Amino acid sequence: MATESALQRNEGASTRVFFALWPEPALAEKLTGIAGELSASLGGKPTRAETVHLTLAFLGDVPNARLPELATLPPVGAIAPFVLALDRLGSWQHNRLAWMGCSESPPLMNLVLGLRRQLGEAGFAIRDPDRPFFPHLTLVRKLPAGLAASVRHLPQDIDWPCREYRLVASTLSAAGSSYRTLARYRLSA
Image 1 (spheres, rainbow, N blue to C red):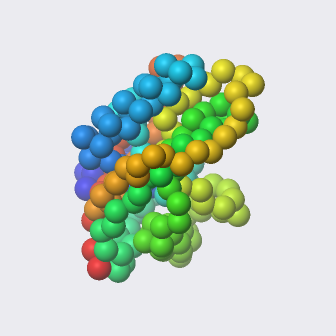
Image 2 (cartoon, rainbow, N blue to C red; image 1 turned 90 degrees about the horizontal axis):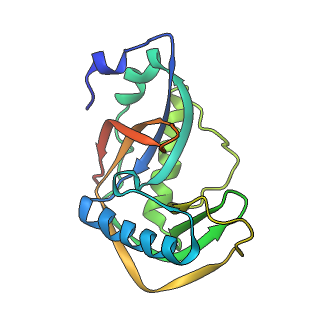
């Protein structure tokens, strides 16, 4: 859990935040290896290992004065650790990225819906609440223009053991996004 003093810096300002699943380092390295291979064949900029994640709820800018309240929300209840089977690759031309995703996962959807409900009850709004949740992680950014959008199934699923989720602060710069974990939440039944 983040310290209160770290969360209260610049109280008049806001911080861009989101909740996400974060892979263990070995899996992050494996995924960035795939990102590197895709980047080599398609072009674009591969995702760095320390930034690989699957966003559960994006809140956008939250006033710094509310960050301690957000970071101390209890974990979404009654969701046991689960394994997410990453089984699809695809690309989106509108934002020029290649992604990896998963087929239907009831535990993941329960986590997302529970988190959205909990945030709403606490007075926090997620950005684009009517947008359907599409579970994916970005592998390559800045794909060349004109690349045909496609989805293909992987020959073998990549299993992602999900034991926790995080509240993360995002800072954007010319070098790319950097992330700082504000709080961690263990999954438990």
